[in-house]
Image (cartoon, rainbow over all chains, first blue to last red):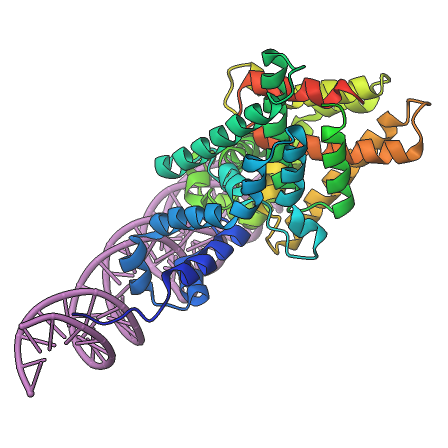
Length: 187
Length: 187
DNA sequence: ATAATATCTAAACAATCGTTTAGTTTTGTT
DNA sequence: AACAAAACTAAACGATTGTTTAGATATTAT
């Protein structure tokens, strides 16, 4: 009993996410989003509530989109090798002449670390905790590692991943490769 | 033949720098700066030109201020141990119940990685290159290391420093400590 | 065909952004 | 004492921020 949407929600969300990914939350204006998404501001507000709502949905869209990177990590059975491959998958764009945008989650984590936006901070914290849990599980696959070592190495890898994501926006493929290789050299 | 300034330039610069450090460039407004620095907008503009000028001077002020961290690194004679100490010095606030603001240079590096602000990007790039040169020099103190290894480890440490600075804004002292120890374990 | 309703466009909203202007006050020199 | 120069206050600048409103348009169920 009503008019049809002239846009596809997934498609415009993908475009919004790309823009947020490239510029961050604060720098991306509704005007830019309107232009990039190709739909009117009113349509954005009816579909996503407000800018924060659009961003949160963009984050979720991002998580689904990078499933191809997480799936092998979660499903893998090779322990620490899976994590290393995950590191490489995370920065694939650095080796493919694609624009370097790092990791949207880490970018957001950095941008909002001093912010008081509760919803977004919660999303970030839970995401990081999930990742740490996965790392721990992978590290525990090695029976020679006691629990203390596992936790220590998980902390190490979590921060390494964090740093890699940040660095991936500015560093060269060679620097990235050196970093990943050194990181996993003696684990 | 003129009126005296009622403020001390170093003092207001310190306050501006603190604010930029906490919030980043984009999030810090002239209104906030006016309030924090305790002087009028007009005075800010006469002294620093514009917001970007104020930020660039804040960056320089920051570099002078963290001299106590860099001096031991540059003057040190213990090679890699100096770098490790430098890492610890960089995140001292994490161990001292002080507010966690990470490293202003790295925060800025991240915030401006996709920006087109040439002046600020130049400052960041030169800063990172300087740091890498110092790392290389330190690593070369070990005569057992060939040049290829030196470069590889320098890349590794530069990214590690980058990641540490980002992570220092959100992680716990234990996580930070685990990270630093693991980073230097097998160099 | 008509009524109902959701979606569109386009303009306007108040608030804030970085920046500038106008006018006053203070200081130092002659 | 009078003038000149710099620093102050406070208000306003136009542009842009995120958000909302008003009205036209399109679609569907009856």
